[in-house]
Length: 116
Image (spheres, rainbow, N blue to C red):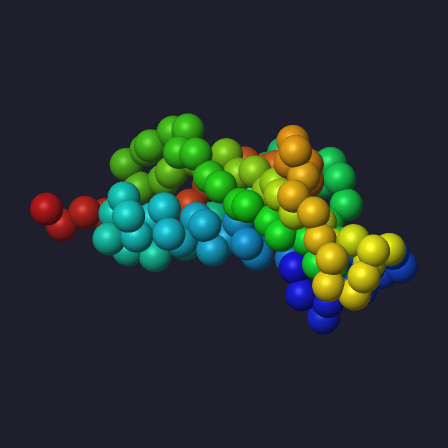
């Protein structure tokens, strides 16, 4: 997580940044499933469970939970897998075991009708 995205005290990163990462993952899912980037239609059940901080390393994933004619419903999760440790040194970090579940959401994407 770049320090340039820390907008709040305590080096906190705004939740919208993580939602943008979810959008990137949704694009990859659509390309892999349908050969098209698709369009994001909606988010629901967005939960900001833990802080994301500058220097964090995130792992973002999506699981396809429903496939419609043109829509796909995805369950997203953002995990903090490494965290900066500025108390040790400017470049210190540690692997978090277990990772911290920072953000979850459900999203719907829409893809074009298949011509095949």
